[in-house]
Image (cartoon, rainbow, N blue to C red; front, side, top):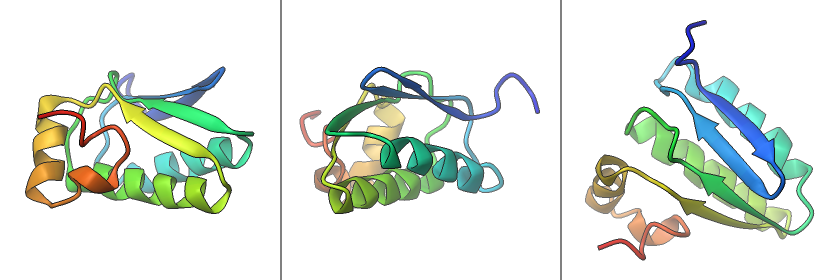
Length: 105
């Protein structure tokens, strides 16, 4: 894997997502994030600043993480999304479904 390989890293109450995500790499990253969310106690902030791509598979993964967090009664907030990812969420009518995305205009 290259240094741009995606990763989910837990740093206290922050889940940092880094690298470039595509259709081939999203499933392992999703599972990695799910393991970390499963171990969370109350709330997590998902930091997307280090995410190198804006792709529909990323939105799908974020929604999966959000549903898992809801089922585990873990509060999940997303921050640091790129303008491109925010636009993609808005175009897909998902901006209000991903906590932290709707606050951006």
